[in-house]
Length: 248
Ligand code: GLN
Image 1 (cartoon, rainbow, N blue to C red):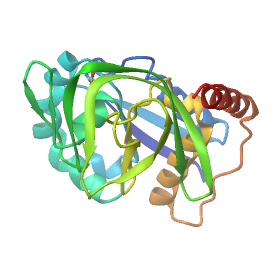
Image 2: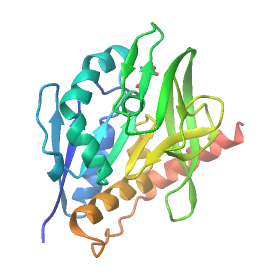
Image 3: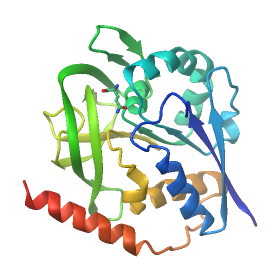
Image 4: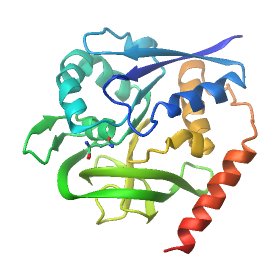
């Protein structure tokens, strides 16, 4: 049986900073090497999406100006279908500006209140200081703890409500708000965080976790994700984590 997954890439022209598109390349590579077809559907303002046949969505980071341009399309056009799909365990990865827009709102430094989709119980307020640098988050996706590595660059400070689980605990860097060591948020199969880098090429464990969740949702729990080595990526990840932890 040919396994196929469909991924909606939300607003690729407006929301793609710091190589966030690399996340899609990593997903495609790790699918292809397992003979899984990954169809990528770019979603631009005005487009219609069949969310019921969509398995994954990726929403990258963007400037405040890019976020302002797409916020109303996200909420008004995609909102109903996307919210329902998320409630039905669509697999979503949202980075930085995309993460902010899945929350309740983003209050920018000019005082503009950008409404979000409200699927993640978080809200974001722009701070005066940008939070920039390498970041390490300790996560456990069900197979034991490990360290996720990435690069953050945001002024927005994101605060969590009780409706989300933190993706992990910040060991190095600022994380969501620079205060409570929360790094990213999870709700059902939706993952949001501030890690650029791009995130997935640096963290194959997360790439595989997302593919596995999408496969099981589409094809049932009897479908196993074939093991696939990632020696170089894991070596690079280990070196980077050790380097950053030793500088604390
Ligand atoms: N504009 C948002 C902020 O600075 C998001 C930036 C980003 O996506 N890198 O908080």
